[in-house]
Image (cartoon, rainbow, N blue to C red; front, side, top):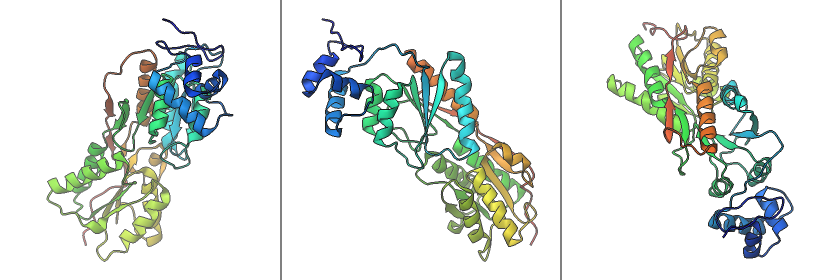
Length: 345
């Protein structure tokens, strides 16, 4: 038996049609069409009931769209060159396939609001890339029911769903940063980490700890700080660190913005970089090589990460499975002039 979907909603899978979904939900086919396409004019209770029936019966729409097909990239925040590099990587891969890129910012929230899902479905993307974002169970189900591929980039935690993810070797990056400072002779090495709930931050601090442990250098809890990935975090935490009775001779910051905050705190305190304090960042954003002194940092391959995530989306949209569920691209320590042996006291 082959069912026929309602006009305008298009497509079916198995023996379920838009008309049958409407019957099961006790609504009109027009209402079902609005839910499928993410349109307004449907109450939350009705929308949830229709979504549940769609999930349970595996309906998938198959329609031809005149608009330019898009890949949607969802960011927790769009406030740095970090995000721009990822966007460039995505765009370089999808543009030759005639796809455009649409951006959504969650204004610092971890999970997109429910309105986003409805608006996203109305845009009918070829796929979605979630950058440091956690989609809800319902949002995962909405994407799956429409056969819209989802890829996680730099996930905040281990993905709870069987979706491909792309990240970097953050543990190795943290290890390389701390090891570089140890090899220069530093023993009092502080770390200003990012948010503890982020998988990348947990990996970076674990690498830092591993380097200290391998060198037989005990970790002073006072030297381990954390906060958001902002300039102000680096500045404020570095001010406190530099006021300690036995201040650090080196600070490893979990991103370049925090490292620049350390620069500012050092300048205010009359501490010279690298003569009195060595500083290392993470990401290797373009401006780090133009700072004074140029910043030693761990390069995170952001453009390549965006490109890999976009490739996953194209593969999934074409019915091909990516080569691996989780891919980590290599980080690399970039040594410049912000690190030096500690001053002899």
